[in-house]
Image (cartoon, rainbow, N blue to C red; front, side):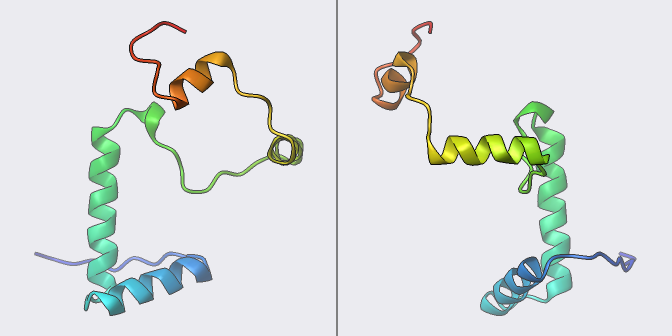
Length: 94
């Protein structure tokens, strides 16, 4: 099998995680990156696009302010949400 080299910028945090995982599992970083890419690409090809959640989400300043407000003071859960969390919502319409 022929090989190609790629170059990518990654965060320091991701680099540290990569190095730690490779060290702990006795893997070379290149092999780990290729395996991770293959797993990720396979998952993306098999899952519907609407259920893929990116690991990082960029927010506008207005959206960030709204999220921060909701974290500080969350809304009360709806009746349907309380039933769902309690395990009482099985096949019932909302």
